[in-house]
Length: 162
Length: 108
Length: 362
Image (cartoon, rainbow over all chains, first blue to last red):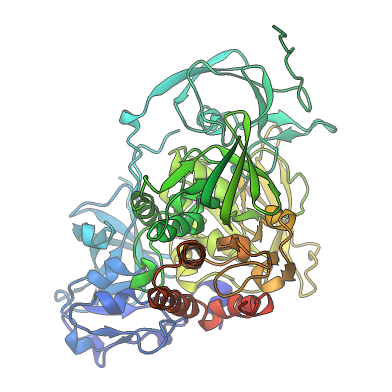
């Protein structure tokens, strides 16, 4: 229960698809491991890939094969705890889609500093897309390219000052 | 400083009415209808009164009119809860003397 | 001269507004009073997306839930009096209001007290310096009036309010030097803490604040570690330069008027203080007097809205005696939603507190 002290989870608690390292499409990484009354990820998934069974305090379950990476869950999650990860976006890079509710927003082609769950910085990545949609309360979704080995580490970015 | 660019909220400052008011005789600007303490805060003024017995510095605390830390004299009337009292054009805001002195009553 | 209403609701926050909207489906001559010029209470400042289920407005920002509630008020049936304080309750059915520099007397068949709560204080040296705010105050400045509240903040308290307000401060361009929590663990939801940690905000559990220092207002704070005996550990003092200290160390229900009205009051630690006893319809020991929201025990806004609806529904039913099976249906629906919020490790506390102050149905 160390996360109660530090605010940082043991990543082994997060559900990932089998053989995720060899996947080359986006899949959801839901870093929600506590029992809180909440289920917008489940009721807004158009493919039924995410379910919260029984009590709404139960943690979400994912059927990865049903997911088509529409990004709705990333924008809907009130805890900003869902990310989409593509471990093999290109030959050398992974990509992560993160919710980013700050101003100023990064722009496409911007360099950003990659930050992990502990707040540690890991060099730079490139923004390839920034999308805002009224359907999820205008939570901007930023897609960042990053080194493959950082795909399961990076969960935040900050704009790299020129 | 006003939050002109906020990731979630649009304050529409351009639609609000900016008014002139006076703090200890000094001319300041604020938006009509916002709490006096918010307008003072925007002008960098955080010290709002001195405590009645020990003369300690006091400023905004609860912002819901329950704690008395923000009481000031406004248009000669003391003990105004500046955290919820709406700002009006030409208001004269001053420090009050301890628990406040009431203005003289004019008997007609 | 006394004004007469069917229902008077004291407090125009989420509970009071929900009570007004619900009651207005069945009756009219409803008055809502609030000390602020506009309604919304704490809900009007919440920029984050709410948790819960679809029926709890989950994933909708608090500010938008607030506008929805306000816009759904039928102005022909509900009157809102802002900048109005309820200053006394005189049995059996008379409330006195201070408004526009006058005192007015109001009578009603039913009263719903949705008076919310007050922020708790922490003892430390110079805790009265300007620049020390309750968390709600900082939200008022930045989310209601667009005033940047500070440059660098130290947040005291790692419950949901401390964690959420720290995030909102960062959205307003304010730096957070850290979050200080006396308990050994973070009290709020992990997902809120996770956001702060990845945004490079340290969370100091088992720490407390010893003092605030500055000439005219806050310039720095001193924190230190706290032992398992909750006492400061000498030699662990650390100075942090901040211009603002925010206190998010809990709320206490505001029940003064309910006391005055003669309602039975009981201390429930799980509900964070003295609260009125109430039945499943939110009616207190005094017939015709209801309570809803944080005044009945500290929970989240979702619970406040449901309790407000329940009180409004029952108060209206007692007056209009509309279709009983429709009434029972609505009651069961609201009960189910409240129950679903009061489960899991976070909801159990409120559930057990509510059991302590529960009144059996008359």
